[in-house]
Length: 291
Image (cartoon, rainbow, N blue to C red; front, top):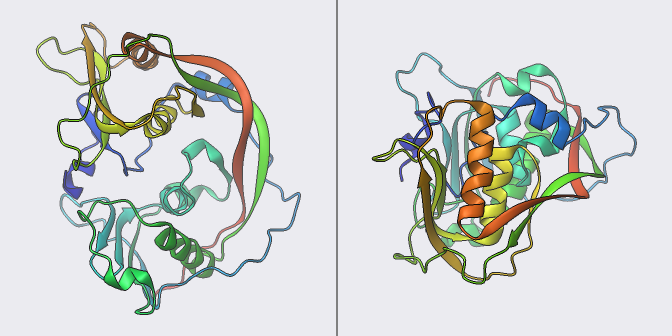
């Protein structure tokens, strides 16, 4: 799947999310508020000082929104180069810290509105110098994510702290002895998970390719805007697809119901529970100066 596939987000129908995508899916406001309480934005503890690896060369600029049909996303290149296009600071934070949207709270409103481009290069001394990604859309390595954290702290004057709060979650569990999960047809394929898959019945459902259960839990949490923890005890990667007719696939309530129904049809379930979840609280963020 190319980066251009991340551009067309006009409707949720037939949208397939690659495993590395960080585009947030809208969920019902009532579900989001009930699922995860708001964390106070004020600091309660000083952020620990740690040494992070850094890009040797990096440019951060406002995106040129006049470009026709821009391609939004973050991309890896051989030699450790990273480019981000048309991403907000909020999305960049989710990528850098490898968290879900609901795990980041606080900060000024512009962090979810203003778009930025980033061009960055890792040091020759890093193991990234010999990196040759499977595709431009491959997920960032842990080292690249740490470098991105360092860049955001430096250029956006980012200050934050972490809080661990107990709140509602879903537990992804196996309920069938033989879940409807199949060995992947292409073991080297880029993993993805999709919902509202369309097809001959133009209905709801869920489908996935080369997906592990922990990864499925992560994708489901983005759909539901609520933490989903993998408790299936299933190892390996799987292909799966379930689809059913629905006369109103654009309803937010029915969209959530379709996720719960589809997961159950696969021989799994999402059981409500409570658990501690790491939350990043933004204490300060400033727009970067031109460079």
